Image (cartoon, rainbow, N blue to C red):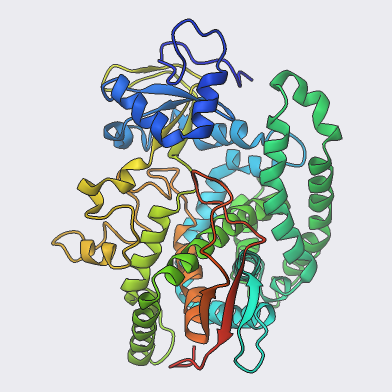
Length: 474
């Protein structure tokens, strides 16, 4: 693996002529990736260039070529993930399931997304239960909680309900496995990547993080496989459960696909992004308290009109959708999306030649471009995307789940996050309970990200809440 060696043909931004080492370019990326990306496009007049990232060289593709590469079959996300998360190593190989992504994609798009309308009430009931467990109240007094861990618990249990059904979503061992695997998998890749590529096959058996994660993954089959066998045995006498355990089993057929690793992959994808997005969103709303009042009015109006949860209730919460997208815009999880590895040589329309093995991405800094986003792009404006959706022909372009080259938080094209529709519903349902049933404030000053240049929630950050009487029962 050529972690440290730049790709030929592309200018390395941050590396001065005559420098033999890539250390300065890497430090430039670590210190200020946004500035490095903008400097790169200025230096190349908008053409592709490369930066040296923590996981190796990366070609930055300009925005005007995003649609050209979005569905190209010669580009894979699985290949990119292999280097980014080192998914070819034991313990992290559950994340390598994206090489079987047609099974994952079909399970989510054909089954999970189509079933969302029927899941709303059950997800709402589970959200109420998990928040009652995580947020004890005391006579209306202010209480304190490390909210990211509450968000992770909520994401884990609601995801388990959709992925494994009612019984396993209340299995404390599975919830512990889900949250632990998600957190440790991220750190394990970073720890292993700190070693030179040539030494990793020798080092990985001794890394404590990988020992721990292998222990976690060894516990998972004892929970999932008996449930799978029970369902298979009961097929002739009972209705098939509508969750991803059943759907994965159907979609894989007789193919070589590990159901347990499939569940770990889905869990990792769901918990990490949902808990981070929910934490960032609540922080933004606390900083903009008028939004609480307006969102409570919207939730109350929609549920009164619908007489409870209906299939279209969440879609009608358009201010909430706008707030979610605005928070996602400001709290990026990374500086580039549409990440791919080139599996066969490509020549782009501008003449750029991409040889096999190149890793590439499209930057996301234009999500703060006032020409695209409007005034005050560095400030939270909960109504921003609601206004943009009110323009003629723009109703669907700026929904939370919609991807386009100017908004890449979920990626774009054939490898765009297939679970974004479930994530959207999950966040909206949890948020309804959080803001209808509780008041929120910061204990001290507003929390900061654990990472300077992208949003990484600090799991130790404590915020304050107190119980309130909701305007309507959820």
